[in-house]
Structure formats: C-alpha cells, structure tokens
Image 1 (cartoon, rainbow, N blue to C red):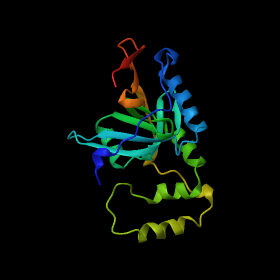
Image 2 (cartoon, rainbow, N blue to C red):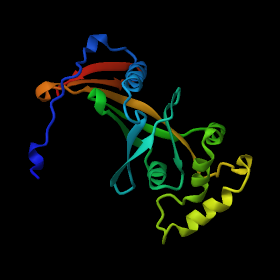
Image 3 (cartoon, rainbow, N blue to C red):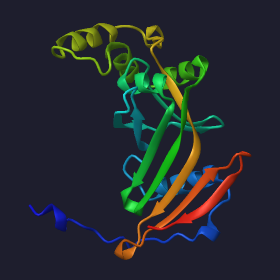
Image 4 (cartoon, rainbow, N blue to C red):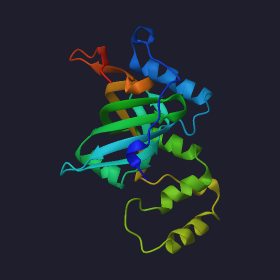
Length: 211
C-alpha cells in the first residue's frame, strides 16, 4: 500500500474566531455538545500524553468524565504507568478528535488527584463489572495470563454490589488547562486553528494560528 497517498479533504465546517466564546471552557462545552448531537462515536474518548522522569513520552486513550472547576476529569489506577508519570511530572496533554465533525481539541495543563470523596462517588456509580475490574487488574504490570484475573472476577461477582468498595489505588485526576487549541479541518489543508492561553494574570488570551 502507498501510505503517502492516503489523504482526505475536510469540507464540513469552518471556524470564525469572532464567533467563538471568550472562555475556552465554555467553547469546549459547546463543541462537546455538538459532538454528541452529531452522534460521534465515543465523543468523550481523549488521548492522554504523559512524560516520565527520563523525558520519555507515553500516550493512551482515557475517558473524559467531567468538566469541573478543577479541570478535565478522568479516572484511572494510581499504580498505572500514566499515574507514575504524573507523580513525577504533573504536566500532560489531552486530545479529543471528533472525526465526524472534522474537529480536534488539544489541552495542555497540570493533572492533580481529585478528592477521594469525589472518586468514591463516581466509583459507586459505575456498573458492577467495571468496579470489579478496577479491583482485580494490576494495571500496566506484567501478568503470566488472565486465568488468575478471571478467577478473582468470578469470586467477586458473587458479592453484593455494596460490598464492592473502591480500592485506595483507584481514583480521578483533574487536568487544569493552561492552553486549549480548537482545530477545524478545512479544504486543501488550510485548517482553522484558534488557541487560548493563560497569561500571567490568569486571563485567557485568544489568538489564531497558521495551519
């Protein structure tokens, strides 16, 4: 296959900076709602890039769960690779890509653990199977096979849901944005890009970027 000739022209929408909200979090909420209305497949899927103590980057998809006053919230195992990276370097980057709308949102900021009570509330709202998986999986660690995991899942499945408690090693992060970029695909690669960045006074500065 000739990979160099794989290309797609973007023609669905345009982006006028003058029509955007002065608050990037409000603008994100508008675009997120439009992604839902457009029936985007998993609109809350976001890539999360972290960096370890040696400067080596790592990226994976996580699920965005809330836009709180503290930032963009996602949940994970605090013993996972991403969590260990964030323990050493709080800076991370998030990316949403909504193919059906030919749109992308990039967020750069700092991730901090949310209060345990908030993690507890979300954990208890999850399906029982998801809660059990959080208890059983030693995320990111090498395992010989899945037999032991499946056996433990079977055992825990016999318990009453109220007995499935959140483990201390599982919870949420909130990414406080310092820079948010909105990208709208356009014809002939002349894409529309608008970046919001926080200045030293904590005010959002909005600027258009070359594609």
